[in-house]
Length: 426
Image 1 (cartoon, rainbow, N blue to C red):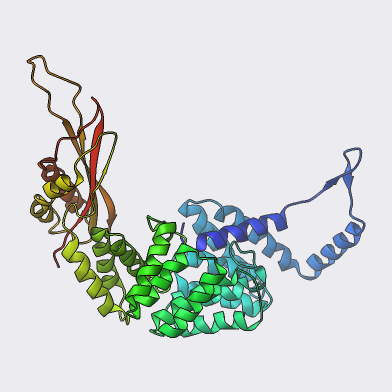
Image 2: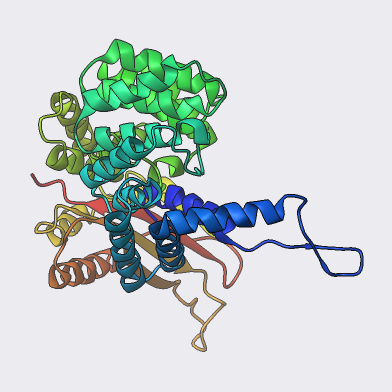
């Protein structure tokens, strides 16, 4: 699910509760009417009589909500069409605009998201949509600012986020506002303001590794390498696989920064192949970012170290000499690079498994350790299917020729050498 998905889901749940019928059971199991239920029903009757389109509008919203809960494309397409019908019927009501904005954000159309949410707030400046992450009092303004920033209007995003802070709200949820502010400032090259905002977010989030990664990037871009390493170490201690940076719902301003953050984290963790892949993606997607030169420097460092086996991990129930295994894999690096020559935007994981033999053969000689090779895609960017299949088959063949040391352990135990490979060609 994309970043907008959680917000849309919260809105759907809230609207479902709002439109669901309610009844209370009395002592004998019968329905108990509220003391003012008759008056409410008369009021609702007159509202519908005076505003007949209001009832139709609410029915359309309810139908759209039901469809948008479904994950298939056809239901969501129909739900969006119904929301547009609701807008045409009652353009001065906010709910359909808000839902359309969240749906656009989920689909990656942030400019459309900003337009729809802006119309929702024009219709009702005090609109309070349900939110999974932030208080309803400022959810709409926050989402509008984020959509504007993600659409490329960073100054408008900053203005909207600062307005929230100026209203005097309190609470740990403001970490999201400070984090998004920091990202906007960093995208504009305003590092002092970015550092201040992210440090405030870090305090409110009690050291969340996601924000620690962002702070490490700020200090790295300011060429404060020691501080960047310290923060990156802390982040990786709490999140060794940098999983926070890989969450599908994580908001990125700008979008390409996901690759800079991951590249820096993997470089620090010694996963040079993964670092090379992500800095390469950053340079391809970042446009006119002020951080291109810094990214090129990191890419060069990763490229020099991304030899096959440099990130080797040996696992399993048997043991294997890791240094000798890395050296054996390094000897087939040239063959592996030849396999990847035409696919620079492909990152593969190779696992070579050796199984300790069960015993002697009938001829009295000791049987050789059985071997297995598996190559899987870790990440790719628009690699044609035929090129992908050819690269995998080639890598499997090359890896099968690696002269790994014999594993030691009980009969039937195994050791697996695991490493990533990526093209170092430019």
